[in-house]
Image (tube, rainbow, N blue to C red; front, side, top):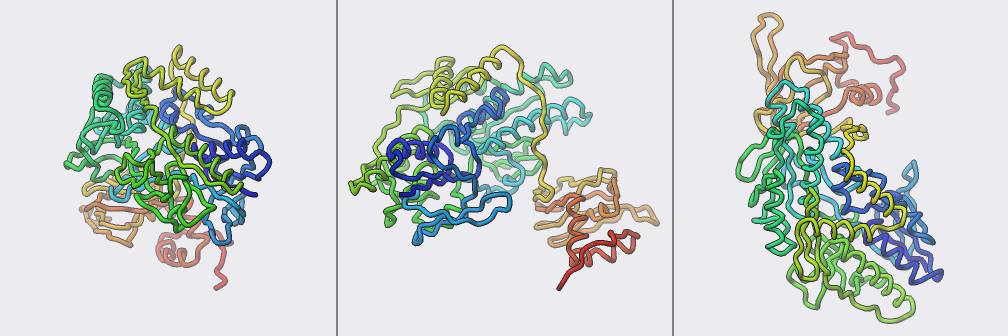
Length: 540
């Protein structure tokens, strides 16, 4: 009997653990995850703020899942009729089929920012360990830049930090980020605290909709006292790498946008063709997928009814760690019952409460209907998640991180683990400057949508001339000549999306793709640029 679990988050990891304890050696259990570690997501805001070392917020799956086979691979598809999962694994990403007798889907959710132009290209997320690491690096980079820049508008943008979304993740992220900034400012002599602006943008009329009104009110007041502006009943219309435009039309100069909204099903889950509603897989109260007696789903990717005839959103299990852990235990028991020919039980669980950290050693907690605020709530928050952490070693390391953070300064070491991708989309609003004459040549641009205006002096008269560049056209190709400075000024004539390619990758395409090379041949010949003699030839 083979039971395969897809996903190594709270739902998947705890399901695999519960299956091993329930079935013992009577079944072969395998978990498939893109990474070989389990991320304790409630701690990601603290990783992003530097109070916890990134490596200490994760646990190796092979350590915490004794007796469970761990396969580091990316799930591509599932053939439910043949009962096989196709994954891409190894360095070469070879497709491999993994058979199963029972399948548990716990892949979580992704994000979808398609309704807000520019958010996908320019917003930071808080989904993965790398997202949290990148946030810390980015915040420190903005402080470093603000320390040395002589341009007031650049400094204003660098010192404006925006978080979109007022749920648990957004509130905890903005609170921890503000604490990182406050504790770092004493080391930046050219930055006055009054120059720092931290905002939270929330479409709903209040934050923390999942908590009682009185706790949401306390959280709002604390964040305001902590120097965080709340923009309620406000959505995001669009954003660029320098600005955010709200649904009210307000333009905010900011180089930091953290998006904690936009949950959406992962493409691999959508491709499975299972019945879905509200972006999640439909399951019955035993967590089984209808018409598939050997397929189960739980966690963020599943729509789990808590009572018969569930219709209201409160009638379904919320996507929280508290529920995922209990769902995992029920799935394990139900699979064991099914194997023995017994009837699986229903998932029945009532929330024991909810917790949120607000930064600055303050929090809010709803404990079995009792409201707790301030330091006691923050202490309960840390104690609860410390107890929930898997593995004694992880608990000890996190405790040491928290202790050192209480008695010492935050580290400002900036380890550059993130680099902008060599080919990326960038979104500009009408009037935005893309680059100016004299700027460093850093990329080749292709207009995807919209239009840009290029301005340059005439070589003979010196008068300024303009040229409009629309979709399908390009600019910045002087980088293939080794140019280090721009000779033109380019601005977005209207809202515009461009594809930017770094010089090294542009030259690779020019040298390795004959059609691409032939397109630019007249330009290269005109300027005396020669490709290496061993440039590959097409065999067509």
